[in-house]
Image 1 (tube, rainbow, N blue to C red):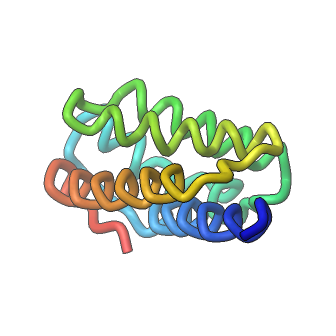
Image 2: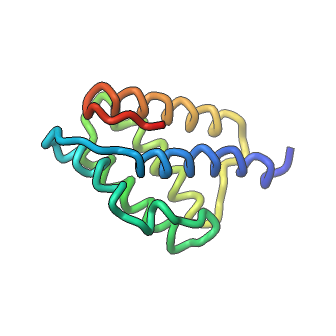
Length: 123
């Protein structure tokens, strides 16, 4: 499998999370939940082109902010996701299946945590 072939699923999963964030809403009052729900209001995130370095930088910045505010029990998963976006923004992509699996796991954990803690369902 080539590097490009492995990159596509990761970009797809990451893009799915960004698009899922556009469906969020929350009145929890926590900084973490507020940052997640605020992502929906940022049209540059919802319309981001994953091949555009500036768009990827903006997504990465948003994810860094969420990571910084994330509770300790989910922070590692946000760090995994943010690290992947930083790689994409730098024009690099993981080339091993373990990285893809780690990102998939992080996305699943984040989805469940956001639903449990923020009452936001990512779809």
